[in-house]
Length: 146
Image 1: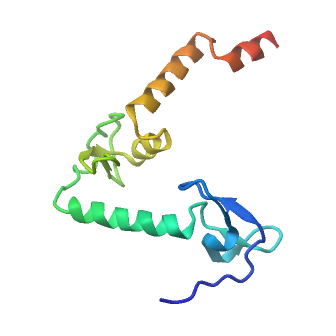
Image 2: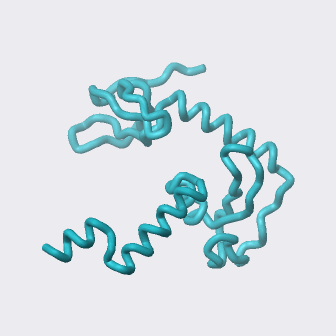
């Protein structure tokens, strides 16, 4: 396996967005030819190398497990938002059980993941939006009282 190029990486630490551990910047991946304004190499994302490898193995296992499950034709509606999908069908699965849940557009699949991929987290988001319609969120009330 080739050795990782650790040249021109900014000093310091970053918190991994997967495991939430504070790690040296050398534990993350950086672009070879993209740089920040101060000349350091740009970090590709905030997932540490260990978590990237774990996620890569998980993605490979999911692809293998569901290799025979064919996505809908392009132009068919997303099973979550109902909008037609013209590219990038996403296979949605339960991260706890590994069970197939359906085919989603990229926005819905990413949105569910960003909200925690649980019914509880989605219910909290719905409750937040319902309160917002009534101007009942604390920050809204503080803003309106100004």
